[in-house]
Length: 95
Image (cartoon, rainbow, N blue to C red; front, side, top):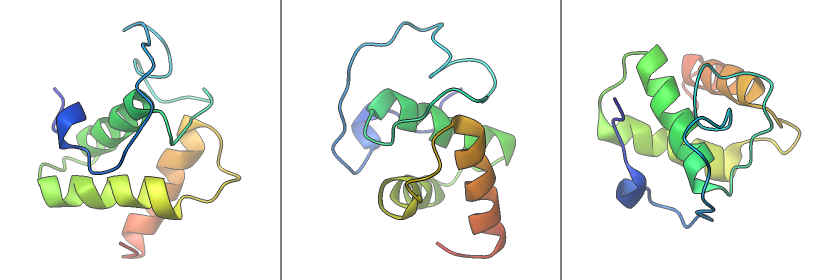
């Protein structure tokens, strides 16, 4: 179940159609390349991170979105690395 949807995101994204079974937006996060400018990919990772960590506060989801959009280092190119970085960032309280 998604906790945040397309209309609730705060930043502007590309919304190119992606099939529902595409690894960029389905299944378990893996080594699939991640594009922080593609809305469906960002939405998937925000909701997946929230699901993994039992986060249900919208404000926290907006912080995750901001971290991905503004702070995410450019050398992190796949879903797993982005999720690992988010976990470290949250653990350290950088929000």
